Length: 379
Image (cartoon, helix red, strand yellow):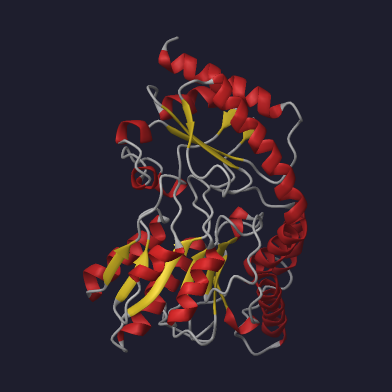
């Protein structure tokens, strides 16, 4: 089986598993407990926090461990906007191509807190301009929340230019870096808050982080014992935090070399598919995209049928975000990019991991895709 759905989740790295193992067995104390076992767990948690902060160019006290990217995005969007309501700021800026955790958080704020949401226009490739952000800002804007790299089409935003606009206006910028962490540089962007998820990096599912600068007011969503400096109550997942720190460090150490290799491999695959399958169209930005993401539409076929045919041939991929799996609706991302609904429903996303594939793999994959499309189109 060839697994090409790494944007949905990646396998746990052996080094990560070994690093977290002691905190699942011998060092099992509650980090809030004031005894030897608890203090050992607390020490490991503090170390993991510092390591995550170091990779992201933030302070250790800025790191809030969460149960994953969805919780991190909810905490960022709801927490920052709810805190700003006390100062009369009830305007949120985002885009229509964001992950559901951002879009649903925005809708919650609109419905229950009368927050006005501005959805910025995107190009046909899924890019948003800094000028559009600047035009959308108001005196009562509480937050701008954007995905660094789109989870379906892989388009990467110019985060530094957008951050310059928001900083000049004194408005926090939250970046959803769940897909870009480990693939793109995340330091020096000038952002105020960033979300990451461990299971995209080689850590287990169920651990993530929101890293938010201390100067940004944040209303907690979970209340209780006051863990995470009162910003996210609940007994911390110490083993998960250690796993996240190790996975993030490993991915960052390898990032430049792995991104270059995977990008070249993906480019060969894209070229092969476009040559082999006349009805194929690449979605997203052809240049400003994640190294390992290749998403296509296959007009006149069924995307789900193509996926089934590929799986029958030993290739695992997806039609888009795993969080929208099972939906019969066309991708909201592709619709926002101006793709017709009937074409959007033919989308198939291939996302490569960090491990090297055989040199001939892109050509073999292109042939498999061509065979799958031919099978479902009856030719």
